[in-house]
Amino acid sequence: EAGVAQSPRYKIIEKRQSVAFWCNPISGHATLYWYQQILGQGPKLLIQFQNNGVVDDSQLPKDRFSAERLKGVDSTLKIQPAKLEDSAVYLCASSLERGSQETQYFGPGTRLLVL
Amino acid sequence: AQSVTQPDIHITVSEGASLELRCNYSYGATPYLFWYVQSPGQGLQLLLKYFSGDTLVQGIKGFEAEFKRSQSSFNLRKPSVHWSDAAEYFCAVGAYNFNKFYFGSGTKLNVKP
Image (cartoon, rainbow over all chains, first blue to last red; front, side):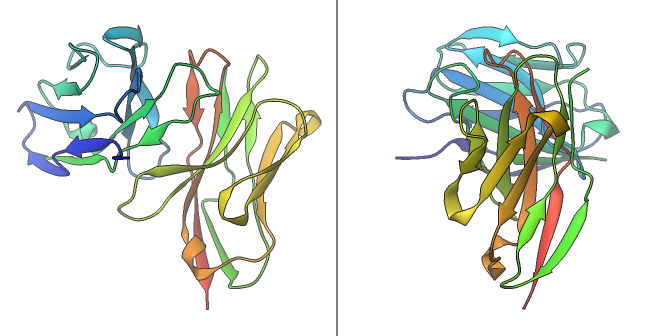
């Protein structure tokens, strides 16, 4: 079974530029999550999708961050414009269904450096 | 406010020695508790989880964790550490409906030969 795929693996941009990350979850997984992991910290949940609908985006900085999962499969997270403090690893995870009893499977992450 | 505290940033143990990683949580409702491991360049992997029932939970790779409600703790243990266990370990807490999910700041484990 293929795992969660993310691309690109690394990205370097200058502040005020835009960037987009892509995630393809495990086939059949209804729930998809995006996390931000700043160096030295644990992952912080940004947004959670159930199929193509947003379940929770309370910690997403909506003035600059957006995410979509239009067909309920793969997802894109965008930052526009980027700030220095957005430098982090962006992790995507998926689970079969929603709920804490479901195991989340994580992708390898996209490491973003904003200069 | 909900939070997870991992008081040890770095821990070094000798190969073959026992290990205990500490985790304390603050959560208003009945917590769902997790331990994840993150190896360099790898994604996060679930080691074990606790929802209810027996407070001693067995996980993969020989790890176990004990839930102590009175101490708001969920410490991770392993009787004999292997060099391949060197990684960063994260404790996490969530609600049943996963409305909120919080990770601790992690503990980096070094294993001496």
